[in-house]
Image 1 (cartoon, rainbow over the protein chains, first blue to last red):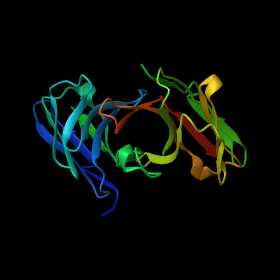
Image 2 (image 1 turned 90 degrees about the horizontal axis):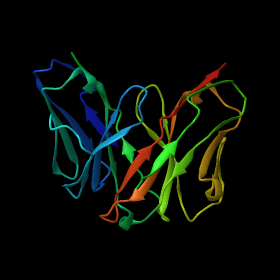
Image 3 (image 1 turned 90 degrees about the vertical axis):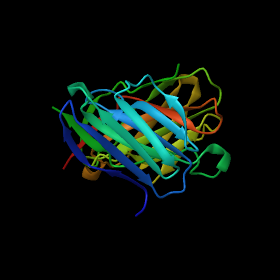
Length: 118
Length: 118
């Protein structure tokens, strides 16, 4: 596998369910990100992990809980979501600028997980 | 705070026409990066270009060209001789270095939906 892989691609859940989105990167990057893409809204940064440490949390409700067990994997745990949380959730990874090179700080995105909350 | 404005929301052209996608940004930083990403119907954002704030040279890559003008805070993208496969949503994004120094967070514009008709 190459690039950034997200599973599942589609998820339908009720408001009382607990589910998780998974992201895996095979690029050797040291930072990972969750973005939310809703209809007619700009992409919203949710969380950033750098070297497995959370460095950004953009006022995201606690019903979204990220986990980064290692530099290759990122999870987004979901519980008691609301219908307005229905969106495309995009994972991305990057290599920091200190690494140098033309690819540094360029985000590589996965194909996204389309979430529908009923 | 940084901001990216893509005033055009939808553009429709006929194949082989040239089309320019506009991007205007706001930032207080002197060091920053600008990006364009393409999002085809499959959902995955595909990286097109990165430009740093110290490099105002225009760039051409095949049918794609970019015009960066710091004086007007613009980073416009032109597709020459458009093709049906160019149909997608195009996002302009701005990155300032995070306080942790190396990794960046992207602020995206709302995107421009380009439709190229045969």
